[in-house]
Length: 576
Image (cartoon, rainbow, N blue to C red):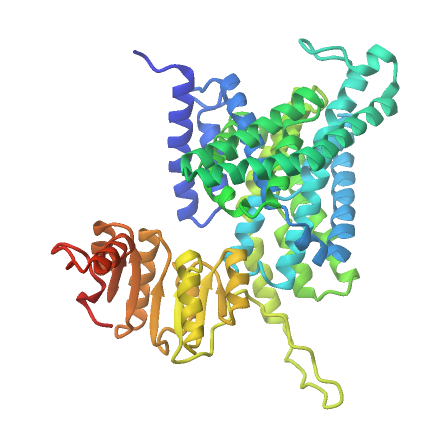
């Protein structure tokens, strides 16, 4: 049996994406660059194996749905409202400036104003993946500058969702029906452009109303019902079925895009207490199809654009790196923020990514954007993502050199406590208990330690768990304990005990190894779910590893007065 084109594109796309992505990671670039280059390698413009473009586009469509579902799932109205006074007007003005610059370049190339608007919009929106990763690597997400950048990004994403709804309508109204599609309403009823736009917005409003009235009740109810079945597999399947089903329903019944349907499915689900679990369960498949989306985008890229149109490419890159970044810097400064904040936000936005690819592909498929425009967008994205870490490094060095000495606070009017420059602030605690993970086990453990009068420091990155730990009076370090910088900030040299309460044995082993290196004498108590995990964590440096199933069996046997089995992993084999 010979492999078909679907198997071929899955194997070639994922394997090459892994190889190129790993190389990009090793060179300290975003793996997204590697995924795009993998697509170039299997595309029609390079020698060797050529993947089926039609199948790639179908897989990319699923990738778009799941990407937009993920955007909606992490959409936080609270985060946006906290910085709304600067993020909303700032993002809208920056989008307008970048769009006008792109429109000007498009008109100079003779494309027309509709193509110019699509081209400019594609250059105006930053990559969610690249921006969040850049902020996380520099520990800036929870700082003022990080919150403004994320809020800014949310406004950009919302604007692009609206653009994805309106662009097909505008194309149909201007160009008529595409081959193989129904005649547009503008042709059937002579509504004109504004009439069709109004009707489209009415359908969008109807879909939103349906989701807020029906979806807000049905989607959480379905997830809660599935969660109570106790089947993790069924819960994961329910999340994916909701994402794909709502997207398909939005397109079939309301005539809006898959992207908008998936975004609202995620946004409605975000209101559920199960949203965090839904995000975790759907993440592997979302990541896999997102990779295939980037591979399919890379397949469309013609590297020859680098030689055929070097000046338009340089102009495109200048708009991405300098045009919209300068606009963002001026806007942030106009709102009275510091130069460091303005420069950080400018660097965060100096790249383009997912939405740019979606807009470029949509524009070409609707015959309103020339293929050269798509190639310029893809080349600009790859180059801007490559250059973004360099830009961050330059800005960080500039702000460090330009930082003046802090003036002494006035006795009459004390200075407010400054915003931390990084998310991680090393603890000053000593003789404290450190708990890694504040889920079901960690929360029970923490509550008991606090009730016993112990000083408690929790390392956690999930917002709900962070809030729960703070409510119980614990100090909190936000981050992944497997990150050496996070663990170093926990003051393990002064700690009395470390409890590793996370269920993932691989990550827990990393924590144990690093903690043992930091403090060879520190008692480390870890949890496990199997004998193999007990052995692994012991090898990694845990002083005591407790297997939950074994302790349950011990308790049951104790109730019967029976002795524990000989081979049982027991907590009393070692003293801590």
